[in-house]
Image 1 (cartoon, protein in one colour):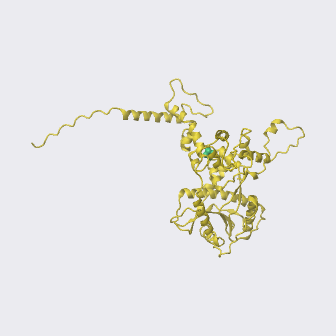
Image 2 (tube, rainbow, N blue to C red):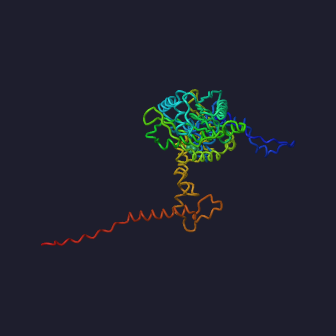
Image 3 (tube, rainbow, N blue to C red):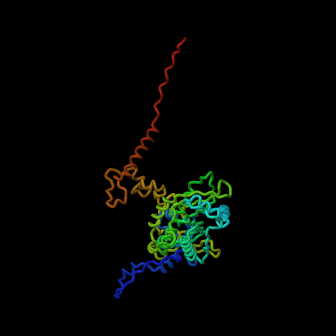
Length: 444
Ligand code: SF4
């Protein structure tokens, strides 16, 4: 997300000529320039914001309760560098070899004006439309200055495609998606426009599709990414529909299926399959709507908080003490879950802190949910051993903490009793076996 370009929040206009009360002044949201300056302070002087990509957004949407990630991503902080400076680096990202192989495969698939890509799109997402003759599909030039310029150019190209009809292929369009009050600029591999005005996302990946099947986890990640692109396309489609006179061209629609293109078997030839995005679209839409606004998160921080690494002259080495950085990071709440290990650069740091505090979150969301109001491993063990006579915890009116009558506490006590019973049975001395009667010889 480019926070430099953060959207201006709505400003209340006071029409009363009396002086504004101090409380109202305090409660008034900071102007966006103030927010932009505050987010720049959080990154550190001269540190450019790190843009969010669809992969990061999909991960952010997968953990909407994490205020820490929402703030760091919203401020454009380099989380990988922060994790290294905290002493908990996470091995993240693709190898250079995989990146180079991916680029070479994508260039091959898009050769000849994307003729092969359009053929695959027509075959899998065409809805009965014929593939165009080679070179007949429109491939508009989307170059412009900066992400905003490119996003505007993409929106114009999509509008022209809707008005013209026929096939159009947009190579690396730029899409803007409003995320927690700031626009994130996203760049899918391609978007194809069908003659009837349907827009579909195309994802080109370098993992193989063997006998028409690819790795389920990788396909799932590609679907989540595509869903983020499709949501951004929906925002463009709404704008285009608003500015298109009725009856002119096709009403723009965004397809709920993306086209996944991968190397066929172990060759460099493309294979494609449609991917249903309906579930991911619904989930991502709901999760992004739940993200706390960046301005609210920044306003809740202590005044002098910053994630500035104070980089040395080499531009890489952090000189800020890890303890200071830890304090800054810990000033924002986190929602650690083991899933973070596959999705967030700060995962090792947050896991370490969760373990230190004995939080049950480190055991997984399923266990966390089962334990109800019990928040730490210590509380769980205490609940399992049960209260001493006359020490029963009174019921909590707010229901925030587990009481002795809590179903989770009861289940734990029962489990502990069963375990003790099983251990006692296992350690009980085994009765000596009576010697078997000697068999009388049948025949003498
Ligand atoms: S690793 Fe930490 S910062 Fe990242 S999503 Fe998980 S809890 Fe949030």
